[in-house]
Amino acid sequence: MPNEEKNPFKRAVTAGIEFVYGMAGHDMSRFAMKTRGSMEHLFILITMGDLLGVPILPPYYSLRILPYVVPQISTWKRRMLRERDLTDALA
Amino acid sequence: MSSLSRIFKDYPERRYVMFGGAGGLGKTTFSAATAYHLAKQGLRVLVFSVDPQASLSDIFERDIFGRGAVEIMPNLYAQEIDADRHIKAYQDAIRKKILDMYGMQQVPEEIESYIQAAAAEPAMEESAIFDQVVDIVMASEYDYYVYDLVPLGHALYYLSMASVYDEWIDKITQLRKEMDEFSQVASLIKRNKQTEEDMILKELMDIKYRINTSSGILTDKEKTAFFFVIIPEEMALLDTQKAAGLFAAYNVPLCGYVVNRVIPPELGRQNIPDYLRNRLKMQEGHLTQIDKLFGDQVLARIPEFERDITGLPMIERMAQAMFG
Image (cartoon, rainbow over all chains, first blue to last red; front, side, top):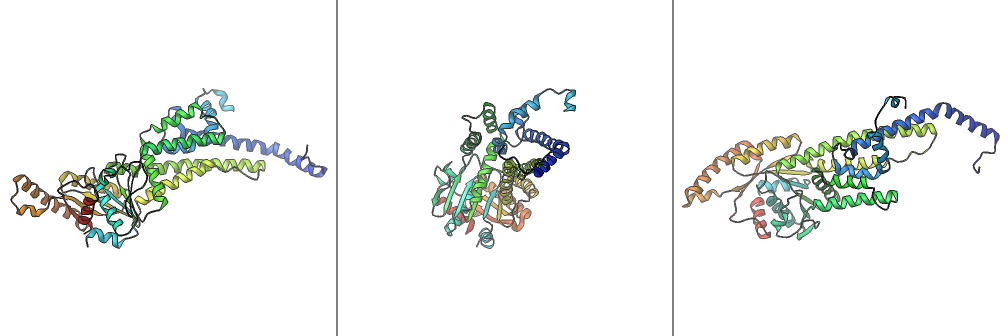
């Protein structure tokens, strides 16, 4: 790999940091991103609810936000409309 | 000098002039005449209509609908906003943005149908006009902006729409900010130095700024002169009293009242039919009531003219009656 550190000490330090991140930080960052993802879907519901048949005010300004949420629309709709069961609580 | 012209002389910083009142009382006529008067004094004036059923074209006897600011005479410009065209252009801009952002050949079907459905919403036209007004006043190309307002109920709807929008934007902006905090936490843990700029938050802040600018003008005591148009008739008086209370609730700064369509009392000294004499008597009672209710807030009494106010010569006569 082109960016691989040659100094064995630095490599050990990097590996140590990554180990600690994997042990402690990874879950935390995953949780933060997951919460953010849920909030993103909540945000789209509030602004684009019309896509699911929930009337939302005001459409004029919703349209201005629309271009930025285009990639998330399909995952959001899937998530909003899918059936829920007990296993959701474990996710 | 009439009380009305004194207000304009004493408060030159009140650059946004509005005449409010029920439908058909003379708002457009007063707007056009005020714009004419100011333009004649060498000030650059734009009179524009926020009414989807605008009548500036009729009063100036020129087709100005959807043509931007049209020069009527030196310093006097008039504009009627074509909401439909604005909405179409707005939709096209949204489509283009989506295609450019994601390198798509065409807008996905469900997104396209949402864009089309949103344009059919009842509030869309008002929102589009509201938004275009922001563009017009923010461009700041004129010394005076004279709003040819929609009738009372509608104008109140605009004001309430602004406050509803404002609250809506506040709530979702707050949510967006919280989301940003989570992104930053995740970046920090992952030791990413840069977080992506939240374009949605940026858009929301811009929308909020635009709404606040527009509604802020309507309620700015320093910059706005709002006049009520009344006529000496019972129903109009009752309506105006109610509306004045509602406008006050939205902090619209009221400059005073202008009484329109006053049948010249000197007619009473002539040999006139009972019908007209009766009208004059009734009018006298209502004028007394108006003076009692609004006192020195009554700035001018404008006579009923012998013909419609259309065309510049008649607008000039109206300006003369209003400003002396």
